[in-house]
Length: 443
Image 1 (spheres, rainbow, N blue to C red):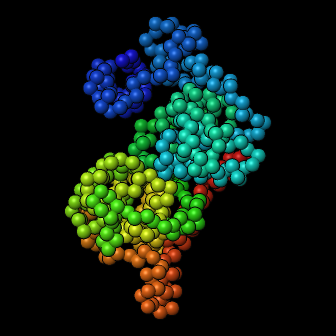
Image 2: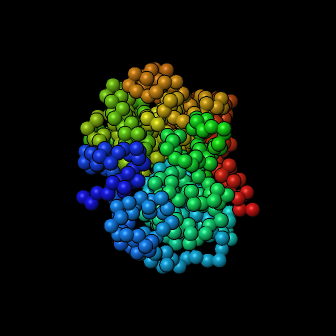
């Protein structure tokens, strides 16, 4: 491998303090295991030397570049910028995505893009993506002409910033490229909105302007950050989709027994989402159904009472019609959309206080939102089940009216069943703080 100690250290900030010999040892022992980035594939040594009058045999060339990413580093990027033909006389807003996967943070950004595009018709709104993903972006109606690729590279991201000279750049959380360009952007032209934990910024000189919860905000000194949690723009669509018909749910062992209580979880199958614990507790509760929504992995195939709904555009119908208790298994989650969606649909929810950084401990939804005070593990899952899981909920309105309830009781039930929708519409239906900030910056 073409190992460069300067590049390896710079591209892996957590290794900054290692001595050269320790860095080399780390590279040899852990690089492949941890899937580390060890080389800047866009750095052209000869081009960089020619542009900056440096000696090509200088061993610290990359270090000089990394201290000022505004310097040209290859001809490919220069040609890419020169060939851009979508610049107009309008003012420009750049929205920079920190990841190329569809997470809650990306969902927030795409919703914000559509709001700004509708609100500011005289401003060009561009989405800066690591790479263009037509499958994801088409779901949000975002066209290719509105997308700029920056390939996770700080120089290219800075060149795009410099070329468009935006009146505002919104940075959606942090990554390596964003940490490198942020010092060159005037503070009155940028918004850094973190959808991550405090620890993601603990090594950074720059703190975010917004975070998604009070638990994160209180870790910053002197009230340095404001709180802007996620929001739902498609409330009516979610409610409508939650009523769509569901096909038979089954695994290789048979069809889901609808008489059993069903525990649900949604998300990527990853260590952070705690899929191993999900499997572990499913073994202890053979009389429960366990449903995991999302991802395409086959890790659940050999478990009799786990039913896996692979990637679906409509998880909402499962929340409402099948799942009795949505349990957030995540080891850490700042303010997940799946919780907002389950609240909206009045589903029973169980969260573990240390593992979620935004607790909806609002009295109006206390009937459906259950908080267990200790971290999630097998023992505490058992305790939470004993405390909060009472019975199957009534999933269908038809079942409600079969129960010979009085008209008065039916009215009471309908009002009670609407609490989640009222709560979400009041507190999580529009990005107020960020929009107010953008409005003030554009004046």
